[in-house]
Image 1 (cartoon, rainbow, N blue to C red):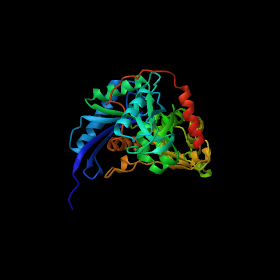
Image 2 (cartoon, rainbow, N blue to C red; image 1 turned 135 degrees about the vertical axis):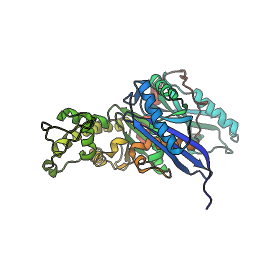
Image 3 (cartoon, one colour; image 1 turned 120 degrees about the vertical axis):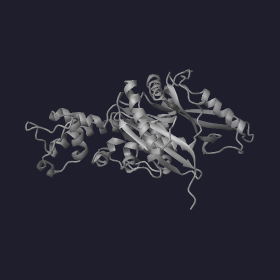
Image 4 (cartoon, helix red, strand yellow; image 1 turned 180 degrees about the vertical axis):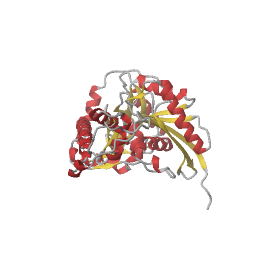
Length: 421
């Protein structure tokens, strides 16, 4: 059997608060995505998803990329970069042009999209994505390709994702300091949705919760696209900090207890199990004066923090209009999703079906990089391979000028989402 020929290389970097991960993939002539190399390093110089120390963050990026390059046996110079924090916001900018019943041509579509781009009001933020969604003919939506059809009015909703200027520029500067060109910055939920959600889920309506180390993003998809997102400045590392503070132990010991013994579900047997605290970050074992911690005590701390985060997730879903019938599903992903019992705890608290979202669609990916913690990284590859239409003219960091105010538009979007849910 003839081996598939790699026609295109795609490289991605996800810079998170706990880790920096890199992925090099080859796209074959048949469209198959083959993993060629992976890399991971502890994240330094990153606070709540934003760059706080360029020099330290750049070293983490460089080391992760170098590891992936060694495994792949090649060097890369361009990467797609995930952006999961920094004042993220999502909106729809509707636009419509008059045609007078004529047959729709490519020139008409181009005119519509140009009008849509000119209609965008960013409020001083940077537009990371400007993408047309389904078209409408005479007010009737759901048209994927209007070419050749007749209509008096042709319309489209342009999907825009915005971010604050400084976090975007700092992320861009950090990656370039590692001698890499930035192909594009891709908003985390946009990428993660491609890796973890089915096309049907995105079409019918689903909430995606990315439970990261220090940031939790809550986003809602309907009609095949992201229609809103909220960011919570809390994550799984806050559970670690609570454990360390509650029992007076080192953070490395708290992280180990959380990963190996922590759970968001409790059991009466937990009172009978005394846990081994283990060594600190320097390999020094706990002494005779180390605290005696039962599994019940540990999970009481874990559950208290998880309850707090889930309460904010519920409020975010309400703000986004995701408050209708319980049949609408929630997909939980990110490193925090690997906490034992996290999905079950959230399902009980939200009263909705919750499943763990794991990335899919890549061949030969190592098991260590196939869990929920790597959903955004894999999603970046899918985003790059899909070659989606984006009305941004290449990658730039210019701030679109504001032509007015957005509150009216945002309220119309939220009202439309509520009606669908």
